[in-house]
Image 1: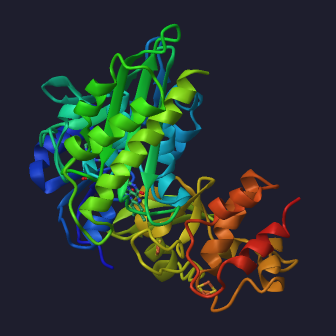
Image 2: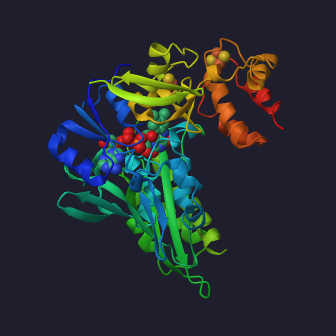
Image 3: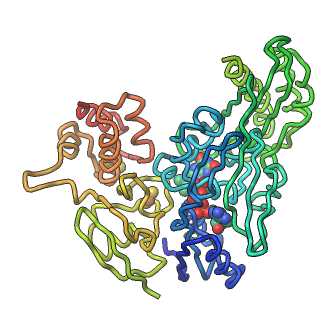
Length: 292
Length: 152
Ligand SMILES: Cc1cc2nc3c(=O)[nH]c(=O)nc-3n(C[C@H](O)[C@H](O)[C@H](O)COP(=O)(O)OP(=O)(O)OC[C@H]3O[C@@H](n4cnc5c(N)ncnc54)[C@H](O)[C@@H]3O)c2cc1C
Ligand code: FES
Ligand code: FES
């Protein structure tokens, strides 16, 4: 398959990248891991006259742990994120999200920023970013901007990012003590599969009263963007953390919080049923992890 | 406009002028005649084009040649020495892990990367290590056995 002709730019800094983007506007596209961009160009889904590679901008690939939060650079690869101790220790649902992307060959190239910009409703890293309350960090020549991740997705392939902006990374606040989170994706096989349904849940509880202090549930592949299951979350707050509460939340998520469609990967009814099951399962595991 | 890149392929230094829209797979196959690296899908799905780039296995059909400036690339051609074929290649031959052979170079590069990082992989780790490589002939069992026989 042939790639169209384009000019290739390799800036060494964010500023230089933004200047190039400003100069070439919508005729230019940023290249991170290329696992979406090059496939879309080969399949003639998109075209471009200029490619601005981000791979020489070292700061974009950094993952840094701060006392209260962790910052993940947009160009950190899935493989690098998965191997980072602070992610393994504090953000296990994100680790499991990135571990589910494609194959290990893809994960050596694919970046978190690319997965978010691609804005697929089924994107594997997105539910975890939603439940960890990630902030999306954007920059243009005019300045910096932060957007809560739940406001970032506007539709399949559509985001809040402006044409003159670059995504520089994500800030994830450290989860509180007595909290846990979990992610499950349901596909047809274990490796390299587009999800039928994918769910991440976060749970914080009071170990004295066993009451749920906070809960966040994110559903993928059941709407035009990954979404929060707000009614199920509201139902959980103040309830005792136990199997029946998790089951009720699953039923709420299944019937009131999602709008799945029929396609060749699964029927809407099946997707709904699986939202119920996976919501309950992710909450159960999140609770177990919270109790450690 | 062509760009000049410098890279090391199987420990040989190269200086090449490449078109920006050429993939690493095409650079290897068409410009350098290293046709051991195969192309099945050209979209990251099959793993036939697997090479090792700076120590990590990647789909060379999804890497632009210009992006490899300054990189170290290992392909299947780099495995054999004057003493003969590489122990991984030998194990694949002896265990019958090759039928049509189209997936073999990619499968072997994934195996090399797996064993370089982890000389004694578990069953699960072996299966994960080749999960990016599709084989339409063998049913994977013999490939698995070949890799298993290489565990130290
Ligand atoms: C075989 C295969 C299997 C896959 N399996 C999965 C899977 O299981 N789950 C899943 O979620 N995805 C999957 N994908 C999709 C893809 O790998 C991911 O979406 C990946 O994270 C994209 O990241 P990238 O760095 O390769 O993005 P690129 O292809 O480099 O970029 C994607 C888009 O984002 C833009 N962009 C990238 N970075 C920035 C930035 N910093 N600022 C502004 N714009 C930017 C680019 O211009 C482009 O439009 C698969 C892809 C392939 C080829
Ligand atoms: S040819 Fe590259 S993955 Fe199939
Ligand atoms: S031996 Fe034919 S594809 Fe693997």
